[in-house]
Amino acid sequence: MPKGLVVALREAVVLSSGFPLLSGVNLELEAQSLSVITGANGAGKTSLLRLLAGLVSLSSGEGTVAGVDLAKGDLRQLRRRVGWLGHEGSFYNDLSVRENLVFAASALARPLKDIDSVLERVGLRSRLETTTKALSAGQRRRLGLAWLLLRRAELWLLDEPYASLDEQGRVFFDALLADVVDAGATVILSAHDPLRSATLRPRQIVLRGGRVESDDS
Image (cartoon, rainbow, N blue to C red; front, side):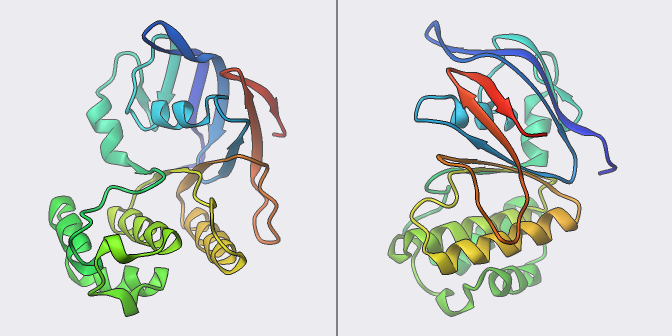
């Protein structure tokens, strides 16, 4: 994707049973960038990511993500262009690591030969036959990253990907996300606290009460 805005929100509001999850978010994010959304529990971090992923609807305001109008556009088109990774990932727990990715590759019409390379990249080649339910939290996140690499998503949306990771896991994530951005993708992730990294220099955006409280852009 050429340089330009991948996210543009103006007074974006998301309601759930009349309760505001987002209360007028104004935000612009450039393509091929890394941004971290921080804030306390209930600040709206996950709701914002779900809005950008096309998983919840815009209640009022305006917004475009990856060229798709959130109010009037086809959100199915948006979901095809976005890679979403929640806390647990969407995997079949009784299938092996390889079986999960074979299923994903078939659904995405990707060649099966790509599976070995993405597993190598995320460090799961030694876990090919391990069932997903037997993976640690960090390994499940690596499997989620393998799925995103297989998907070739242009916009990565990651909900608390660093939670419960040890230092080795954090360093691995930092390096992979830096490579992904260098390759042309846009990454937006949520974190409870600002991301401090020797490798990454992300844009730090703080939410409070469903609004952008501060933005270091």
